[in-house]
Image (cartoon, rainbow, N blue to C red; front, side, top):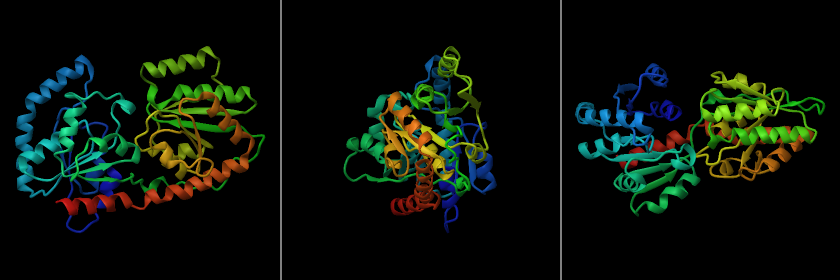
Length: 360
């Protein structure tokens, strides 16, 4: 969303207000430096999160009438003309649009249960009702559209708009690892959780090396949680510490990717695939699970390689293939880079701006 805001605020006559629920670990400082007006309100989320989450939900719901009163005052005072929600797990924007009698756009960026294990309070039927009372819906990919659009009535403006990616991620390589005697470095980047498929990647690299390849796998993500422990224990039990490396959370991603040759996307249900595009922009040869939006971004054997979702043997075969054929490795990396450049051109911001002006 930050990438979109960066471009939208350049449009004449547009003022953006961002309402956010936390003071920590957000992009708010960056947005404020851009001149975006920010409002902090500790609103509740619709996703269930255990007993601890339930108490937070109850407390914030009790507070919500006061928050809505404050928001409505701001909307009236600042003469806001349209309200935009950036996730399905927060419905404050939708409720506020009804209170202020303003058009509402919902930007759907997640499958929900399939990718993040999200179970919504009130169920999906309640979400569909709210979506059908909004003015417009943006889907982050065709895969997301396929899930939600069958539940949307005619007359609701719907559009698939892929993400913008900042030009800062353009990270062209000058040298490729084409010496067949050199080992290859592969990376899988993202939250270490089952849906992201790190264990699949570990097992595939283990098998690829048994088949004669020399590949290191670098796992980038916070080393926390039960799934991390499961993956780490597998690495220890199978004595793979010379093949698998847990690099922790990284912030300088261009620098990190510059040291890699291959990017792996093993997610079961990728809503868009920002990691795929960013990897392409760093000239990594991308290998992705043939599912959800990853299939939309990777054209097999052209901009990357696809393998059957969850198929460890096939992923291992793809890794061995690139290890043996460095010419193909370079070709895929260059083709992927050329394809991904279009995501840095601000097209999403332009399309969203057109939608906002059309509906407001």
